Length: 145
Ligand code: HEM
Image (tube, rainbow, N blue to C red; front, side, top):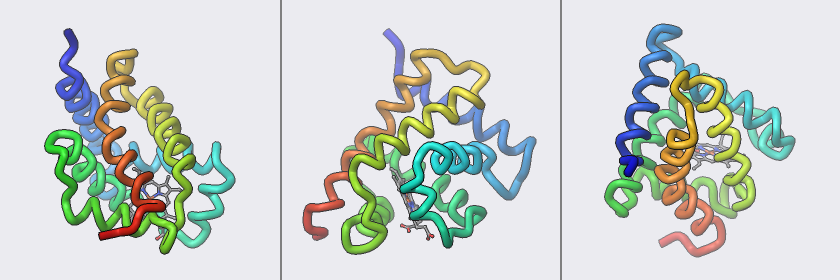
């Protein structure tokens, strides 16, 4: 049986390793992700009108480690909680449906950039990110503690 966590880690390492050869400063993976995301979603494009993408890419890369930790432990870090809070109705106001578009854009990006991409890699990424996405969708409407 496939070990999904292991398949995810290897894919992520391949992608980050590839980043290093492109630029030490910026993550090509997440840079390309935002291009794909705003290309498919006019709503996302509109939300990011005033965004500094160089900063945004770095913040998303860091937040991935909180998403992974949440998948592994089931306990949200205060950082992940703050990210969820900032995306709730009161602040960025990200509708839950947009997270599905976000995930599809990320999967498309993994497919583009991971030379070993296959069905198992796709499933592993979906499994790792789903708990964090569920949390963020939940906090869109439910009151923040
Ligand atoms: C699980 C998925 C997501 C993660 C991990 C994530 C992560 C982050 C992080 C770390 C930041 C910067 C800190 C902050 O403002 O909280 C941020 C900002 C932001 N995110 Fe997300 N995000 C996600 C999904 C989305 C989606 C679906 C949208 C929809 C368009 C979105 C829109 C924004 C906006 C508008 C900002 C502020 C940008 C700015 O400062 O100009 N995010 N996100």
